[in-house]
Structure formats: C-alpha cells, structure tokens
Amino acid sequence: MKAVLLDKITEGKDIVLSECPVPEVRPGWVLVKVKAFGLNHSEKLLRLGEIRADYIQKPVIPGIECVGEIADPSDSGLAVGQKVAALMGGMGRSFNGSYAEYALLPQRIVFKIDSDLPWEALGAVPETYFTAWGSLFECLHLTPNDILLIRGATCALGYAAIQIAKALGCKVVATTHREEKIPLISEAGETVLDDGRLTGKVHGVTKALDLIGPRNLRDTLTAVEKGGIVCQTGLLGGVYALNGFDPIKDIPNGVYLTGFFSNYPTQQVMDEIFAFLNEHHLVPTSGKVFDFENIREAVIAQDEGKVNGKIVVKL
Ligand SMILES: NC(=O)c1ccc[n+]([C@@H]2O[C@H](COP(=O)([O-])OP(=O)(O)OC[C@H]3O[C@@H](n4cnc5c(N)ncnc54)[C@H](OP(=O)(O)O)[C@@H]3O)[C@@H](O)[C@H]2O)c1
Image (cartoon, rainbow, N blue to C red; front, side, top):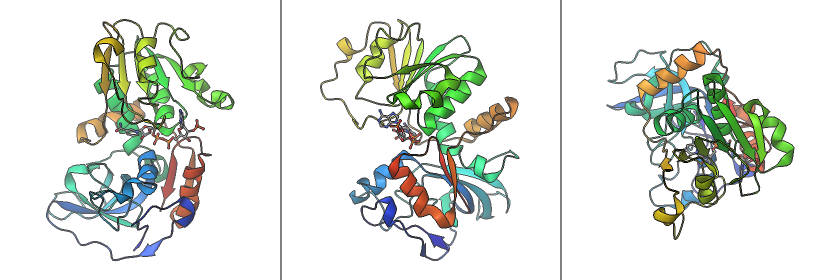
C-alpha cells in the first residue's frame, strides 16, 4: 500500500508517499480501508518536533483520525464493509495512523457511523467534531440560553464549534487575531478582533471555548461573567503550559475552569454527533479537499496556514 512514513522532522515540502506492506490483523485490532482523513494541528506538531520523542514509534505513519470501511474485522464482530470513524488513543504516534491506504487500528478507537454524507464530508468529522462536541457539552454544559465565546475561531475546531452552537440556538461571539479573517467567522453573529485582551470588550459571556491556550488564559478567565465556565481546548497561541499560574488569584471567584482532551472517544458520543448533524441538516465544515496522491500539497497547505478550515484528504 501507499503511505507516508516519518522518522525525522519533516516539512510539508519533504512529504512523499512510500510503498509498504498492508498490515496483518491481530486480535483486538481491525483493518480499515481508509476513505478520507482530516489533517490536524497536532500532526504538524508531531512532524515539526515531537517526532524526536522516545514514545513515538519510528518510522511512523502519521494521522490521528480517519473514516473508512472495515476491510478485515479480526475478532471484533464488525462486518466487512461497515462504515467507521477512528481517532486518537495513540493513533499516528504510538502505532501507525491514517496517512495510508489501510490502517490497522485497535478496536477500542474504531466506531460505527450511520450517515449518507460523502466520504470527503465525513473525513472532516472524527477529531474536530468529537473535540468540539466534548468541549461544548461535556465540559461547558452548553445550552441554547448561553452566550458562547469562541476564542481563536479561525481553525477547523472553531468553525465546527460555531456551526454546532448556532444550530443549538446560542448567541456566539467569535474572535480572530486577523482583521481580514473576520468575514470567515461572521456566521457566529458577533465577531471581535482579538489583540490579546478581551476583558471588558465582550459582555454577558457565560461559556468560553479557548482555542488559543495558556498565552491568553488569564484574560479569558476574566472575560466571562461570574458563574461562567472556561474550557481550555486549543493551543494555537504556541504556549503549552503556564508557569506561575495561581488558581486562587487567576481564576476569578465563581468562574469555573475545565479542559478537554480528545483521547477517549466513545461510540455514544459519535452517535450523538451524527444524530445532531442529521437532525439539523448540517454538512461538516471543511476548508479544502485534496486527493491522496497530492498529500504533499495538502501538508504544504497546512504548513502555510492558507486553508481556512479543515483540510481533508480523500482516497
Ligand atoms: N484538546 C484536544 O484534545 C484538542 C483536539 C483537537 C485540536 N486541539 C487543538 O485545537 C487547536 C485547533 O486545532 P485545529 O486542528 O482545528 O487547527 P487548524 O485547523 O490546523 O487551525 C490552524 C489555524 O488556526 C489559526 N489561528 C487562530 N488563532 C491563532 C493564533 N492566535 N495563533 C496561531 N494560529 C491561530 C491559524 O490561522 P490564522 O492565524 O490565519 O487565523 C491557523 O491557520 C490546536 O491548538 C489543536 O492543537 C486540541
């Protein structure tokens, strides 16, 4: 099969498709014929640095998510041809991922999907919608009465969160750090140019999805109303931890801080996501679709940051 194999720091321009054997199934693992996969910021972090870490299998086929069909169910009980989505749980890091024609995946991260959407639309769903869903509902307990702040909305996750929250009926305030990108998030209803300080500029915010991360976290915490919840999900600001964070002083009285990690997907949440998309007639948002043969161009586009929204690769 054709696959991308990484063993060192690799920029988009150096991505090549190599030939390697189709993996053999073993108990507890299923073979998926990959039909589409999305690119993720975390794969960029892997390619450009984390690949050096000991816990990364090398060479590794990257790719933390995919959609496809069961080619060999092994002992899973799944039927050959079953439509599935898979994500996370070490995929594309401690075992091979989705930048390939076939992926051998542990059954625990492979979920049935019930949808008639085309593969390239389904390819935008697993990681991005699972993360948006978990952040909004498991962590933020979002309801239609909320005013939701999405900080750093011009990313795949941000666009998906806007779509879900608007379909739910929330008021949404979306931010970008680039003035020229304000039209891209206008679906939110209210947009704000983020210069690093939102406190005092946004009003009535009851829930906040922070995709910029620790760089602005203290300000997000003071930008929400008393009783509000802040969910820390993204790291676009390039700062990954906060030295000297003082919970007593940095979290205002009566404000709640939570975080979401997409490493533990479940069939129940996958079912909820597809039921919601079906009920609201939503097509998953994507920025650009590439053919697998053009994976190098897809990854270059990711490195250049010129695609607005999810980059999807179809096979
Ligand atoms: N917690 C979890 O489990 C989890 C799961 C999935 C994703 N994430 C995180 O969520 C974030 C979004 O992921 P994604 O895959 O949706 O990203 P993505 O689609 O690859 O988005 C990247 C884009 O974000 C934009 N961006 C917005 N504000 C930015 C800022 N302040 N600094 C730098 N870039 C900014 C950049 O465009 P412009 O600068 O042109 O606006 C960039 O092109 C990432 O940090 C990712 O690691 C976390």
